Image (cartoon, rainbow, N blue to C red):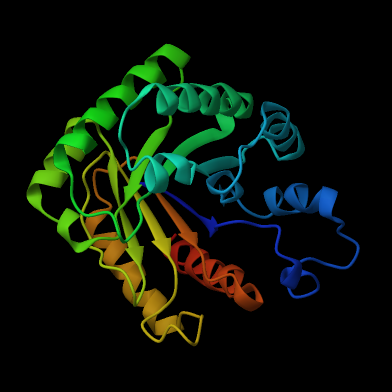
Length: 253
């Protein structure tokens, strides 16, 4: 049976104070608090800013031994360079992975999120993934890699064949705004819950989460693990939704 890893995208939200974090838990102890209650989180800040090696090392040391990280790759690769390989991109990616190594065995996955304005470029994707594979071998790290597409043109068999060639997961990214498909292209799966069909509610209902739990049960056979992250951070809805989905899976056992 696949290992199920569930929590949220990001954790340093001011509006989570008191709503999720007890008053006595200060900023410098929030990660420790999380890791004593959950198994994983998705790092979002790395999408916007370069995270230094010392910071990753600090997170490694502050979190519980069993805790794992999924890290969102810089938008420089996906939104600015748009996966186009050149010397600048390769240098930046090498620095990124050198820094990431400070997470040690707690680094489990890396997420690449493409913008909705970026239509299908199959050859460019193939070249990028080939270069990425070479960097990972050079840096001697073996994280799971996932790709989130937001333009409809990517969702076709030719894309899936390229992802399968490199054992890259197609992100199942549920939202009422972007296209997605429930499909596996690797020996693991990666899911992101942005907001429900009624995006103004910002919270998934229990029936919606039961539906997704049933869907996951259908495609989980043969997978080593499934990463599931909630991104509907308003009012700590992501925490509430992740807690309920965790409970649904535990109730099976």
